[in-house]
Length: 231
View (cartoon, rainbow, N blue to C red):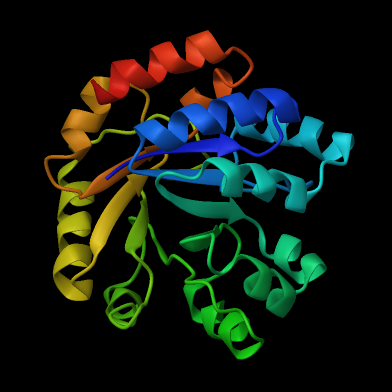
C-alpha cells in the first residue's frame, strides 16, 4: 500500500488539482490534508503550507469537488477534530461517506472514535498507534472497521528523522498486525526509496507527507519525486 499525503488547496486550487489528478492515478491511496490553524502534529513544512491555505479561505467543499472529479484510488482525509465539528459530524458524513474511504484525525484519541460514531459520523476513523501505545490499548482496536492501522513511527512531528529498522519499532508493528489482524501503514519520517524498502520489510504500507508537500508547488518536481519512490 503506497500512499502519499498532499495538502488540499496548496499552494492554490489550480496546482492542487494538477497534483491530485496525477497522484490519484499513481498511488494506492491518497491522504488529502485539510488545513487547520493549530496543526500540533505537523512538522514545519506542512504547518507552513497549512497556514497559507487557512489564510486563503479555501472551502472544504471545493477541495472535495476536485477529489470527486479525479478519484482513481482510495482517498483518506487527514485533519483535526475541530474541522469536522465546525462542518457538522452528521452533515460531513452524509455528504461524503460514498466518496471518502476513511478519515485520519490527528488529535482524536482512539477511545473517542465512538463519540464521532454516536453523533452520526458514518465514515471509518483510522486508528493511530505509536511506539508508546500500550498493549491493552492496541487490543481494543480489534473491532475497528477502518481499512488499516496508522502507525506513527516517529516520536515527534511529521518530517522528523527515524531509524526504520530499530528492533523495538519493528516488533511493535508486528505486534499490532498480529493482535488486530489489520494492515499496518507506517507514517512519519519517510523520505527516500530506501526508507520505503526498509519499512516494507515488516509493514503493509507507507505514507509520505512532508517530502510530497515540499514539491506541491512544482508539478514537474512532484512527478519526478513520486516516480523515484514508486518505480
